[in-house]
Length: 522
Image (cartoon, rainbow, N blue to C red):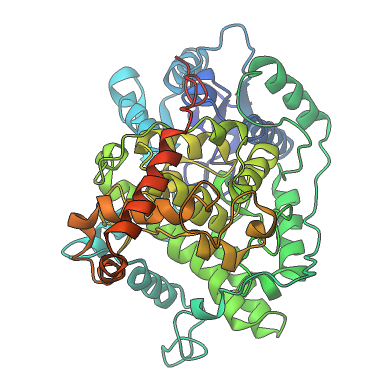
């Protein structure tokens, strides 16, 4: 047991890493670790039931591992009688219990929580020392330095810098392995008929997880999503097993089919590791090194390995730096003045659009949909329909088990909605039904016809696409990646244009707005 006036080390639910900066180098006989299940964090948006199970169960398992290793852990459960139900409130109670001489805490992943932490020196009599979260390979300070003075923040440029700095997929003379930096052009294959990806490992809930499942069912019955079956890894050992399975059986075809979508096949060749990565059970750089070895050993092609590594040290690191660079303004950006309410079917899944219905089903059942489903089906619809950004942000933050604001908000505001006005993406990722038809088997049995452009039976993405392009012409026509599309629009003639616009408006007028209370308590 620690002696008098120990160091208090709060560990948050996305900091479940034994080598966390605030814990590294600490003496076990002079440290109290504080872990807190608090109502404020479970309900600031009404998170998917499985997301809460994942985080609380992973926290409880992590606390047990720390105790077994000889650490003193002060663990506050959600239902403890005196729970203050906020991080600051629980730290205050822990300060009373343990009289620490200092608090050591690793910087928070979310701006909202970091603002709370930065108030602690004024609230508590002891010293508060803040540590950078060096589980990310690019610090917030380093990203700011990289971004300073740049006219455009381009992920590809950042990614190449990370490759060089970390010496990943680089030759001895400083060139990219294979001669190219990016093999994205090889990673856009549509699904093949009869494609049969290996099963993603399921992790049977143990007694700790079963207790948390019961807790979530009792405490959060009106939150979105199915509670069971629950299959996510909740310990570092389970997460490593999941990584082993990916590198053994799925990474080979991950690259070519990473953009493919198949009705009822939710995982395909994806790693399914983002939940473990984002709460700290896996190390991002270790995963990149493992992928690199898979290529060097001849177990995976370069396009798959490079694509996987780019998602981690490229995109993941980039959006985290982008988030901290632009907060808090990023949260309120609405460059396209989108004002439409989120449709009710985004919560219920009750739509005749087969692509959307399947993506929402997967989201409801597993708190998961892969990145192309999120961007080019769900996100594309929100963009084209002009859904208000805060409602879309809330939806994505609620429904996905891997969603924390630092990763969710840049993807939604910048990549999906173009709400930041083009700071993140060079163009809006708008597409008609043709893209979805090309990259999936959704359209074949849909009630709507993707080959029909207008009218009641036309795929709604077709008229919605031109409705979007028309209403934002003043902003987008000068964009070098989009502007040439308007020549096609102009050649259609007034009658055809009117058919597109009328079809889109009729569809939009028929959308039922979501009832209040899905994402946040009213």
